[in-house]
Length: 124
Image (cartoon, rainbow, N blue to C red; front, side):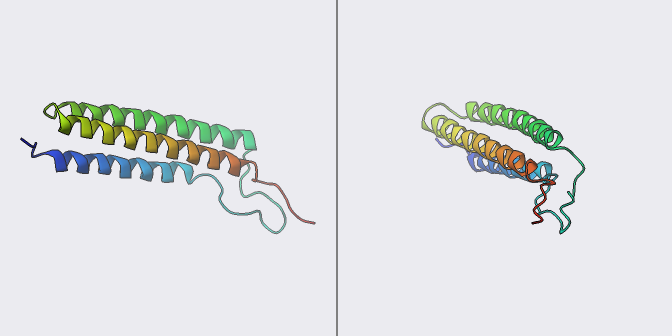
């Protein structure tokens, strides 16, 4: 017997993933992603350590949100009747969770790497 709400749960998982990635894009969009101006003046007055702190803080908040999303998705999987459906749901959620954490880590690293380039003049 298949559970009729399985496509709905799958849609909710994908919707959660899409909203998480949208949040990541918005949060990390504060890092300067363009080169220095012709004069070498930074577009941001923040020191690199301030930028790195912002990257770390954003990562921490997004990681907490991913943990909450994961716990909710696992709870939904647990509602499925035992057997193959539950196991498949849990395996898919685990894969999604691991992929989300890897993406968050990559985004954090990219944000931090960008902090070192802020205000680094290249006139010469």
